[in-house]
Length: 253
Image (cartoon, rainbow, N blue to C red; front, side, top):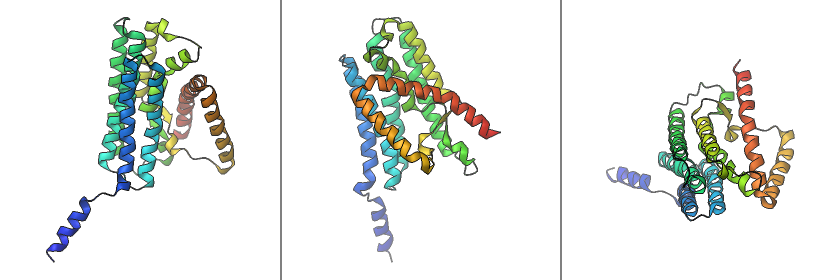
């Protein structure tokens, strides 16, 4: 009778290796963000951008793994937020700073600070909203984010890299324009504009085959023409923001 509670308590402290997998993936995302900063300081900008993009894929994977393995935890949620801030709120703009602002106007550093601060506020707001998430919230409303998520914000912020590496346009020759663009990316993260949440997206059966074909084509284009493809994907995401606003307004009526 006395030993039973002790054994239960001991078992409750034990964690399976399976439950650690999502946190390991999150830690890898954090490491990629740190590596991207180092690569940026070394002038290896293409590799730095690719490291951040890889971190984006890992960020999408860790939450799915946690739900699949039924190993969600408060620790994992906090670690994910910290990793997101470093990999998507700090790394992209520090690499941009090394690329275009190191010897440029002080306005560039102000834009970098603004972006990182807005990213931190965006993540803090998201965490608070998750805690306050009400079951009475309409199902359709759960298909939208409030503002642009941090990983998507990083993708938008790195659009100048895609344009430059793809030979389309070089923002590095126009540091003031680049600073203004980073400010726009920062605003989108802290705004209250509704944006689509891919995690909650549901497809009708008749669209599944078409979606799989589009995903396969996207992967093929990423392999053949990565920077041009990333540029197109970034513009498509920016285009989806006003569409999401109109859809949200229509559903709200």
